[in-house]
Length: 205
Figure (cartoon, rainbow, N blue to C red):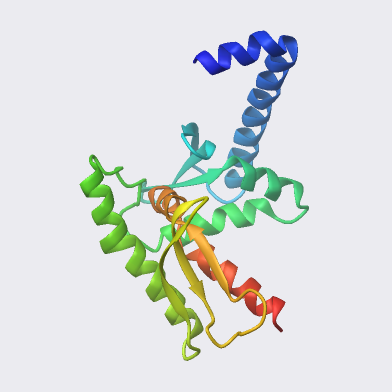
């Protein structure tokens, strides 16, 4: 709180302006997300949560014909990028729920771990094995490297790459806390690694 007060006092009106613009942006993005999903689903609800590291997170819930709820979260930056891209953001957002609906009976956001030990168990026993297996399956029979590493700037990262590529960048690394956040938002964390690896392949094509 102290920092916010100091910034507001030092900056005066511009700081208030900035907060107001952010609030307007969040409101507009939240509305656009609801509108986009209502093109594909009848029953749609949404709320905005503030994530400590990544800022505003937009959590939407849709229901299937049997009234089962499915929830998924999106980051402010990615939604703004999608809405401004000129593509089909409604189709992109809906695709996550269509995938979730393969789980019968609904799939709401998982309950966050209640302790550090629970969080560590979720990372070690669910998150990391899932991501490593997904990378190996996606690029089989090609040889791939996947495992944990440490980055001075981001801390623990999950790294994946192609040992056979000798020149230039052959590895992508995603911070573990970002993968963990995706998992808690009902997003497949492995997608981030797969996108990075396809980018490496494109760069070396």
